[in-house]
Image (tube, rainbow, N blue to C red; front, side, top):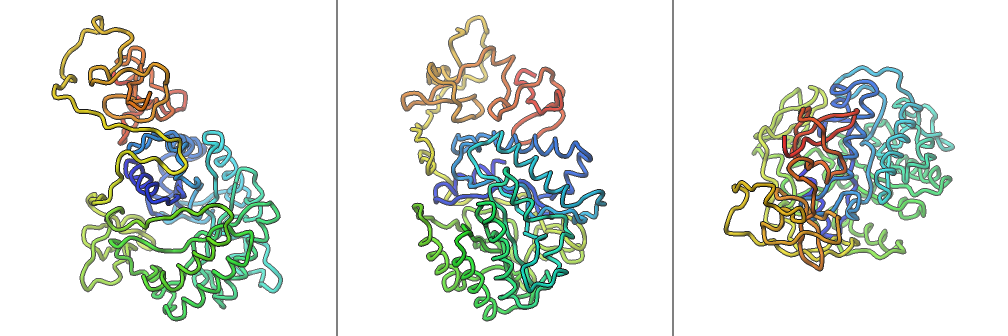
Length: 465
C-alpha cells in the first residue's frame, strides 16, 4: 500500500486524477479467484468490505491525508471486467447470473458510499449485456447476457454514479471495427442518458500483433471512435488501452506509440477539453522515474510483454503467475520503483484543505531507548514532547502518522495527538478507522502491522502486545 500512497502523491503533484480499481477479474494483482480461494461463500463479501474499509480509511504516508478525503482519487471502481464465467484460475462457477452481479455491485457500491461520501463509484464492466440497437444481430456475443452482466440494470442502480464501457472488437468477433465500434459507443450512451448519468468510455484498443491491425489502419479507426465520443453529449470521459511509462517494455500491440499520441490522441484530448464547462488543470506526464520497473528488456526476445506463453516468461527476472493459458509475468524479486522525481514535501493537494507542513527536526539524543517510569510522566504530555514538539490542545485531527505516533497541526506547527495510556490502548489501526483488539492474537500481518479479528471485524493488535 505504500506504493499506492506514493503513486497518489506523485499524481497529485501533476494534477492527475486516479480511478482506483479495487480488484480484477483477471490474474493481474491476484484477481477475484484469490478471494474465492481465501474466503469462499458469503465470507467473500464480508472480507471484501473489510478490505475496502481499510483502503478508504488509510492515511497516505506521503501526504498525511485520508484516502476518503483525497481529491486526487476520482472514483472507486468495484472491479475490472467482473463477470460470471470461469476466472483465469479455472475455479467452478455456481448459480451466477445477471441478478447475482447486479445485486453484488449494488451492495458493495452502497457500502462504499456509506464509508466515503466524497467520491464517485463506478462499475468497471465492459458493457457486455445490452439490448442490441436496430440492425444489430441479437445473437452478437457482446449484446448477449452470456457473461452475467446487464449494462442497463447496473446503470439504473442509484449506488452507481457512472457506468463504464470497454471495447475490443476483434476478440469479440465484430466485423466492421469502425462502424461496429461507433454503434457500441452510442448504444451505451443512450442507455445512460435515460438515467441521467454520464458514460465513460474507459478502455479500448486494437492490437497490431494479436489483432493484426497495422498502425496505418488503426489510427483512422481510432479517430472515428473518438469522433463518436466528441459528438455525444452524454460521454464525459474517454481513456485508452494503453499508454505507459518509458520503462515498460510492452510490445503486445496495444501500446500507443509516441507519434500516435501526438498525431491522433492529443488533438482529440484538446477537443474534449474544449467541450468541458469546468476549469481544466494543466497536467504533467509521469515518466519512467515515477513508475514501477516491472519488466526488463531482453534483446531479441519477442514478445517482451508480460503475458505468459505456455507458462513461460520472456523477460529477465520474471515468473509466470496464473494459468498456463492466461497468466502474467511478474518479478521474482521486488524491483526498485522510485527515481529522481519522488513527491516533495510541503505541497498542497489540488482542491484539498490547505495545511502548512513544517519539517520535523531530528533530535541528537535518541529518547526511544530510555526507560521512563509512567508515574513520572504527566498525563497532559504526549510522545511529541520528547521530540521537541508540543501536544495538540485544540485538535484531535490526525494529518500524519509515523513510527513516533499520530501528528496534528496547530498554528502551522506539528503537534502530537494525545492518547490515554498509549502503551496500553494504542494501536496503528485506529488511524485507519479500525479499533484495537482486546487480545494479542495475531490473525494476519501486512505492511501496516499485525491484525486480529473480533466480532467478525478486523482490529489492530495493540502496541503493548
